[in-house]
Length: 69
Image (cartoon, rainbow, N blue to C red):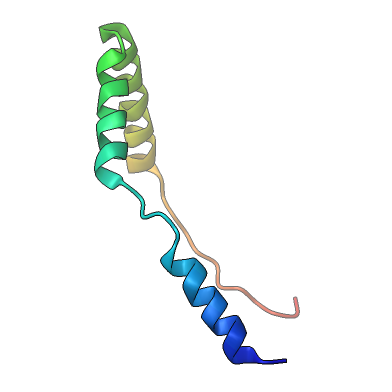
């Protein structure tokens, strides 16, 4: 099997993939956010605030992995 042909095919496919359009995606998210009502925005904000308060109180502990037990 000729591996150089496979590498050439893979590189060719990588070059032809469309590039993501981050600016358009960001604008779409902003447009969706502006379509929400004030009550939806308020409920979403309070949900984030509650999550923040819960995580602030959390005590994160870590037990090292013990292999063979």
